[in-house]
Image (cartoon, rainbow, N blue to C red; front, side, top):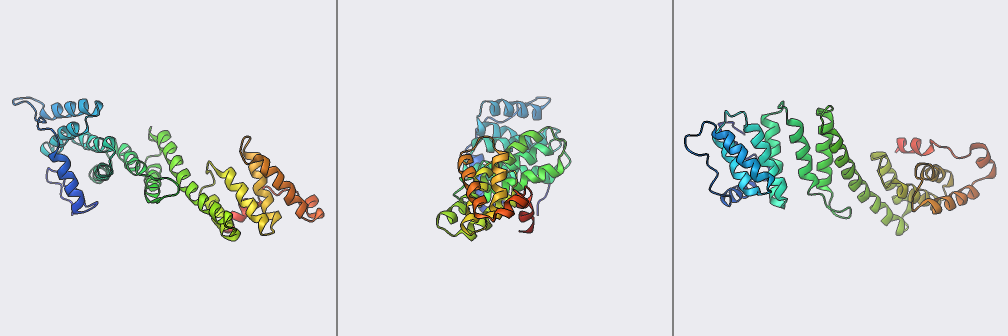
Amino acid sequence: MIKMDGTFRVMRVTGAALLLMAALAAGCGPKRAQPPPGGNQPDQFLYDKGNEALKDKKWMRAREYFRQLVDNYPQSPLRPDAKLALGDTYLGENSPESLVLGTNEFREFLSFYPTHRRADYAQYKLGMAHYAQMLGPQRDQTQTKEAIAEFEVFFQRYPDSPLMAEVRKKYREARDRLSQSEFEVGVFYHRTRWYPGAVDRFREVLKADPEFTGRDGLYFYLADALMKVNQPAEALPYLDRLIKEFERSDYLARAQKLMEEAKAAMPADAVKKDGVKKDEAKKDEAKT
């Protein structure tokens, strides 16, 4: 259980390991993070000094100033901002350990200050802490999924935030990373000639992420896999979408050639009567 007794206690993100990392980080920090004796606004002094160090990317020094403020001045109006700044120092350091600690700081902020004017910033940074840990499309996508989930919470809770444009950009990049990962699995199935598996995987990607930036390749490989299992009528709508949605694509020439092959494989009366059904692919995705 978390108690608010004037000192933020580290939440259980990774149990004892997280506490150890925090202790080590604090122990390595500077010893000069003390306000001058007799000052009228020691909390302001610490906050200003912390920001100076933060701007200079002196992460550990900045962290010590902000930690002093958070721990020793529970009634200060600067305490929430210092808590956010603590998280920023961890993200700025950008090590595996610091990113875990940064995640914890932003989660704590949202737990203690859910209605604060900067709660949207905390939620954004929480997503960015996971975003910074995303791996390549051929590796584990756990952090990518976590980033997507946190950005989606942002969309739900803060629809009018001035940070919306930046969050949408990062969200798109995270979604593309996840979709690319799934797409590459489908391409592997295609190359090993397991076409039914490839078709299923490609359709899943389109259903989950219809705005996938690399969907031109997805359209092509899905259509080609459908052709390999003798379903030219199913393949045509995807080729049509590729050609119409992408003025420039490495797949255009091959798509046009494959479209001719698909039409040639269909009964002549079917091609003449129905043409290319533009919404065939969308209806198909809705059924899966």
